[in-house]
Image (cartoon, rainbow, N blue to C red; front, side, top):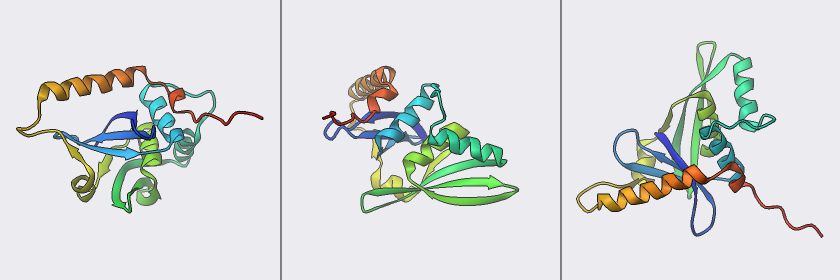
Length: 166
């Protein structure tokens, strides 16, 4: 899977990370939290925070322990919740760690690790944009709008507004 981008759900204003299959036109939308969206977006835009964020800290910790993230896998969708695993290699052995997909993706892009999704997750939840019924001009226009959004969005757009002070 490749990270296609981070966007907002137009109805609920929740962030979504959109994964795309390496081959074909299947997209896997995963609703995520605002902090994770900011962490993913910052890395996609090659921005660095002034101090390490949680995912940066975890990445540095793994590096200091001479461990590498070798892959992350979105493993299942259960009761409308996605699950993932981070596969870490250290001293020739692999360790599987349960994770939220958003945290796993944020870590994977820091470690340049590949992202996978189980076939069952893709079959159940992916959206496919191909076939004879697809108007390729409309699809390209939608993709262009989404890419424009990605060019304009900033991590601050995903900051949760604090409640007004008394």
